Image (cartoon, rainbow, N blue to C red):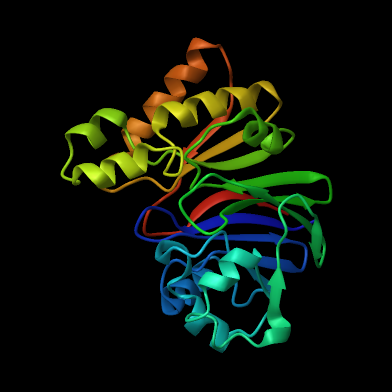
Length: 259
């Protein structure tokens, strides 16, 4: 069994994640240039993918999609409302490669079963994805402003979960953003704070999750150390043990690599 799980880039300036199970390779989001995606795939000894999954239409998740799809014409999955918003970026994606991802409905990409899960974000219809790789489950679920019991429940049972820790509340409050933007980020349609990530991390760890990766950190309103320390303190206060890591902003992060 060959299993790879890498972030190629993570943060408010661009997001892309790669997962491989045996011979099936999936790219989640194209939020950096196609050139950088190819460079980072090469860095992890990969060169092609079998499908692209889009979480939502914001530029930090799709800015490289048009060029990447032109050079790598594989199926692209997104929700119907997301496709409606991508009309300008999807011109290089043939109609037969435009696949619909329906929240709660599992589909197969090669050896991987994929289940989209709704997230709460100010987009047309934002989703995360659960990947079942021969019984080992992974979650990629960021851009979620509301931490509900349903959302937490959808991620339970995952061996590894990549979750959002976008901002520190005090840094956001005292930072340079204009008030309307601060309000949007902290709203139920914005992003998860470090404290929300800590609450989710504890719930997932209690349910059996072994690895948690903090992702999509804001460059202006967070630091890797602040996010890590906030979540780790919460875990330690509840005497919970889990592998905790922060995804790199500009380079690949090895989340899991097993043969």
